[in-house]
Length: 108
Length: 116
Image 1 (tube, rainbow over the protein chains, first blue to last red):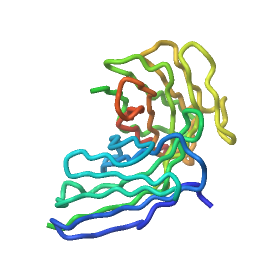
Image 2 (cartoon, helix red, strand yellow):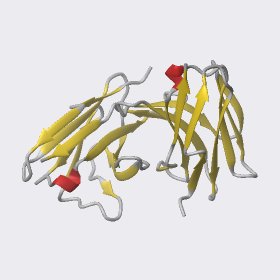
Image 3 (cartoon, one colour):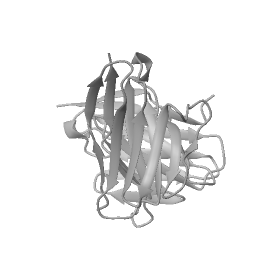
Image 4 (tube, each protein chain N blue to C red):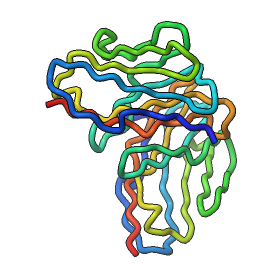
């Protein structure tokens, strides 16, 4: 069983919809990362969280350490948000353990 | 912001040849570089961790003689796939530890390797 589980695996929504992607992990972590992988493969860091909530533009990330759960929200979704969103956790040292990603498609 | 430049972005090579992938940190010193491999529709798998001036630490199951990693300077790390085989075809991506950013890590743009 993967230490990092994401849901859903695939998500298709209409432009403008509110999007939620979930991440659950099974180990104690020092930080959780949300990443965006574009169709060409390049990866962009979106958030690094250790507690609470962060917001950047239309993106919001929350984490509940007690429940070992994090969510990534996208408000007013746009076709350019279409990408694979990856949750990764850092356990102790510098290594990251990655989820399998959520493929998001926003239809105009 | 912090940038890691990775080259080449894609490469096709013949079986038995070697391919070198470079990752350069452009505006910061990358004391630690992580190398990942990603097969289609799978998550990133850490191959090795390299620290400037020392030998890389390889993950279990990764052949160190096949995937040569060199981190000779604070701004350059290289991964050489030696005697490449078709099963080495994959997406390779590097990531640098950067305490100067809010995210902690900066990723390269990746290299798609196809061995024919």
